[in-house]
Image 1 (spheres, rainbow, N blue to C red):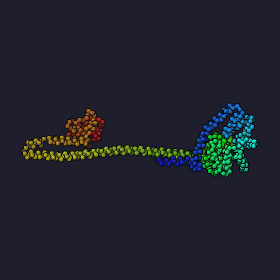
Image 2 (cartoon, rainbow, N blue to C red):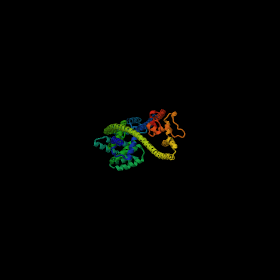
Image 3 (spheres, rainbow, N blue to C red):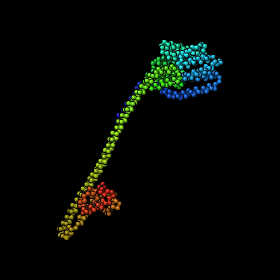
Image 4 (cartoon, rainbow, N blue to C red):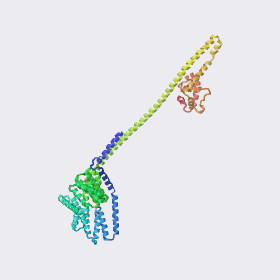
Length: 537
């Protein structure tokens, strides 16, 4: 029964969890599992990150309230714009408008171009790519300072990259990709920081069919920086390199790393998480894919990031349908399992009832066997005692017979001597005397008493316990048993017939009967069962 239950439960559990465990996921290396676990925890802590983000924004807003100088106000508006740019696009647009209202600021003519670049950036996040290009085309790059020019090239590359991602028509897509690559070249040409040039070089290698070169560059750069924004970008570029190599496990790993930094940076406009969801879906991890896609959708909507919303919407119905089918399948299996468990419970109840019936029956049989065994032991003990009694009395009987024969022979010779001596008077005197018989009977009773008490040394004490206190029998000094005790000693030996007892003791029937009645009336318990209790002593 126990083996049956264990096997049944194991089969049911394997049916329930088979859909979740059956795919042999290719990405399940220790490193991948560790980063996915970290990402799950980060998504679970998203509300905590948001609280810290809003706290930082509130600090900037409080500083803004205290600011008096236009340039100080402009810097705080720009900081708030940067905080909101990839977090909440409409708020970023609001603070950018506040920056624009402060222009012109004395001594900072370049700020107008900076506002245009930032406006293009926020319009791009909102999916208004034509408007973003309009603002960018209105800027003369040659008139910009070195840092502003790099910012301009980054904005142009980003905007054309978005257009390439958004465009379906192949020719237009290639045109936008070419423009994106041109601006990468411009960044490499004019960037003052080695880091900027190396990042672009790695990006060009990853997208240009040289993924190994890109990986070598990126691995080195990842060791040289701890800036979360740069780490996010480097990990995403590493994903693109492994995408070119076709290594799915590494793609998942670096997309997860990118998404992890995006969560910690508290940005809502990102590409990493929904692309990771697609890869996990293709690998069979539907639960994680569904969770990551929901998170991406929530963030894209909250940020008003049009492109990201469209990207999520493209894959969402597929993963949602797969997830619903999986849930429906699991519900069906669970329903079947519950039905099976119900049947099993009924079978167990029946089995328990059946076992209880047989256990009760077995207990009754054991009790009967115990009673029978006890009775058998009593019978064996009684037989053993009876055998012992027989041995003792047979030996005593033989000794008594031999002794009696010897005494008869002596009595005969004494009579013969008296007859031969012609002592007629003495002979008649001896013949008429019953002294010989009295002596022999007395010796016989003494021998009987001694033999009986050897067999039952506690008979007198046990016998008296059956009598009331004032009816108990005490033997006289020099006596072993008196007449009353001798009668019940015979009964203890199994001689219950009054005739035989009277003959044995040499009394009349009435005398023996009176003795038995008198003692029985002094019994403590049931008088009718008194002699049966004596036989148990």
